[in-house]
Length: 488
Image 1 (cartoon, one colour):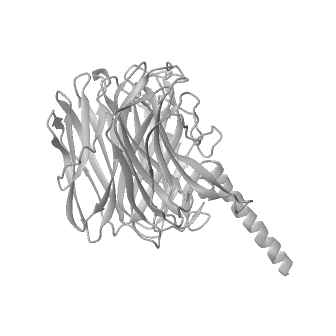
Image 2 (tube, rainbow, N blue to C red):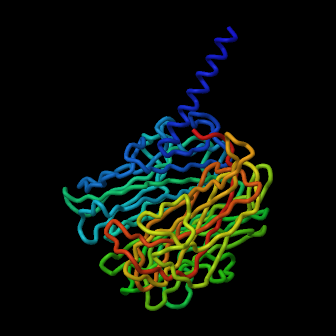
Image 3 (cartoon, rainbow, N blue to C red):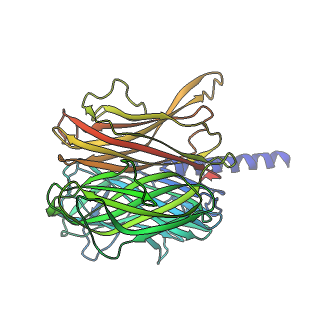
C-alpha cells in the first residue's frame, strides 16, 4: 500500500510537471496558487508571449482579415490548460494591463494606404464570458512599410478576488474581402497589487490643443497614500490633427513639480495617417504619504496639435519590503547625445541575437540585492534625435546575474535574459520609443542583477544596411514585486 501511494504521488508530481511544461512551453508564465489557476495570490502576474506558430491556444503569426460584419480575432490569451485563466487574485486588486504585437513587413500588409485597426484589452470571468470588461479599445494605423511593434496599456481598479481571462483582440476596420495583414510576437502582461494601495484613471472628455509651451492635457488624477509608495504610470492619447513633421513631448508630473527632463517624445503621424494613437510608460519612486495630484503635460517643438481622449493611469505599489520581497524603484537616466552606429558595440548582449543588426549599449546599472522570488515590472524610453539611411530599429533590455551550475554547485556562470524587445520606425525629424518590460521568477539577487539597455538598426526584411541613430535622452526604471505562488 505504501509503495502504491508512493507511485501515485510520483505520477501526480510528473503530471503536474507536464502541465507546467505545457503552459511554459507555449509561452504562458502565469502565477497562481494552484495548477488550475482558480486560487490566486496577493500580487497576481502573467506573461503570455507567442514566438511560434504552434503555440497554444493562439500561435504567433496571426492573419488579420477584413470582416464586413466587424468580427474580432483573438490575438493572445492565457494557457489552454487553465481554461485561458491568467489572472488569479486572492483578494481585491488593482490591475495593470500591458500588451504589444509586431505588425509584420513580410508578408507585406494588403490594405488601403491609411487603413485602421482596432485593438481591445478584455478581462472576463472565462474564455466565453459574454460581457467582459473592455479595459481599453484603441484605434491605430498600419502605416509603416517596415516591421513595427505597437504597444497598449490599461488599468482596472478594484478587481474582486477570483480568476480571470485577460485577452487581446483585433479587427481591421478598412478594406475589402482581400484586405489583410500579419501580426506576430503577441505579448500580454498583467501585474496586480492589493487595493489598499492607490490606483486611479482619468479620460479627457474634450480635445486638448497643445502648442510650444508646456500645457496640462487631459484630466488630473488624485491619489491618497498613508505610506510611501512607488507608482507605475502610463498615458494614452490620439493625435487628431497636427502639421507634417510635428514632434510632441509628453511627461507626467507629481503635484505639478518639474520632471527634470524626464519626458517622452513622439513624432506625430503624417497628416494622411491622422488620427493615430500612442502610449507612454513611466515609473515614479518614493511618493511620500499624503494627498497628491498626477497630471500629463505636453508641448510641441513647433506648431499646434489637437489631441483627443488623453488617458492617464496610475497603479501604486508598496515602496519596499524584505518579507515579502519588494524592491524599491531603481533606474538609470542619461541625456548625453550619442551615435548608435550600425557596427554596434564591441560587446554584444548574449540574450539578444545580432542577426539583422548589431547592438549598441545605451545604459547600464547594477540593482540593489534582493533575495527571494520576484516579478519584474519595467518602463523605459529612448529618444531618437535623428536617423541615417533608415529609421527602422529595435530596442532591447537585458538582465544578467550570477548563478550556480545545477550539476556543479561550486561553478558559477552569468545567466542572461531579455525582458523586452520592440521594433520601431523612427521619423527623420525626431522621434522616440516608450516601452515596457517584464519577467517572472527570474532568480534571486543576493549580489544584485546587472541591467543594460540596447538599440540597433534593423538591416534585414527590406530595411537597408548602414547608417546610425543619433540617440538623446534615455531611461529605464525597474520595480521588483512578490511572486507568490507557482507557475500554472
